[in-house]
Length: 576
Image (cartoon, rainbow, N blue to C red; front, side, top):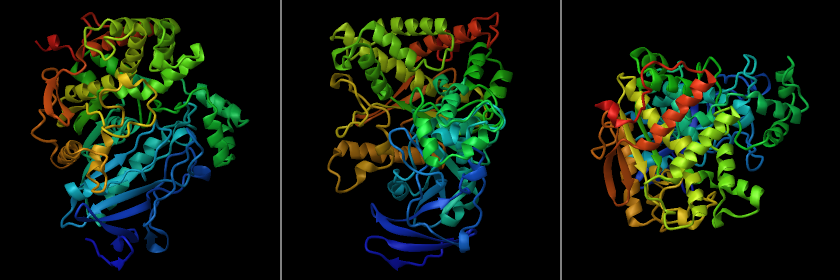
């Protein structure tokens, strides 16, 4: 029910609607031939300042004076990864709604950035909304120290950013019909840390299918052992020291709340390693260690284990995927280790010592904790990948170059790709009402490779981390943009259709078969040359990871091995 009051603007027009929270003024413009209303900077929570800093968010309520100017973006959430940026009054969302009849399916985007950087404002949902007739919502949530600092105790439990996301979804459910959306038809989707966030929202017992119905994860999974902080006090004590606070005293939270935003930003930037603020088990939003639950599942594939650990997860429809070269994201980490140890650029290859140390720093930084076990895991993965029969880009190059490629593959597989496959497997193993589909994106962009890539040119042959996003959001369809080829424009149209079809119907299209478990495990390759279905993704390497993971947890006493052989999630032999 849109009550439109249109005022001519230079490029766009103002549009005003009456909502249950008050009048809202946005802008309307023509996007790819379709009129789209855009409402920017809508507050969904009270500013998390004062006593609300490092606490669960509180609903914003009605707009001041019952009227809101939503023509400009809101503040970016405070962050300090690359530069001091943003502020704490940042819990805003943006809505892109096509001017068409009827209530439309809703897609809520959760941005990535390692839970430390990023913002909703850089993602233009207008093209996806216009072409596919869906309402797209992008949301901010607290990041870095502000969103994830914790002592592991009830006074400072952490995961505030996840609570922000949940409140934003709740706001959309309750209010989106005023903007042309259907509150009972919500798909949440995200990439990287946004994809992990989607997984945590699915896993959390705080949520259910009444809040949202479908989920899309792109190169990110809540099952990644790398991204669960099992010893949060290490970082918290560094932050406390930087602020002249004492993390072990009862007035620690008061001390944190007495500091300025800038002081907290600087303190969070001066820790041992970047991107240090991760999810934690808080016995509330995340009630148990998902990695340990996954390992228990692989060793005890009973109905009780499946439903207790992953029952909530299996209720939603899920569409999950990864990029074939996601691991290129971490080449900067390898570069840093090589320069520190030898002073040499990785373009000249690396020694076994550099490869070993780099893998200990990522992806095996948080897991396993025991140094001897960490050495075992790293050496096992190096031996496996160095001797794989699979064709590699470095096959005709030096052994030093091969080590560079091995690092990109191990880091990408362990951090991003294997957890995504496991995400799909446990979803289907839960055997509830949800359905699952999977993709692998392999297209190498013809223009402007990702700015953070620090590896050699010969290694880049496929899709880097985030490379799929421009196609999902219709960037190649901008009429005056000649940097994309006709084939890439067509790929973008197809991917927009797939993502929107899944949101509307729970099925991305005829190019896909359902991902079932343990048999089939179908996924579809996405490329400009066409779409090809395959089965059992990452089968051999995942079997290795399952075996190593179970060994670690048995050694640490986290699980009790059964008398039966361990169960490898992706082993086709277990299906027979």
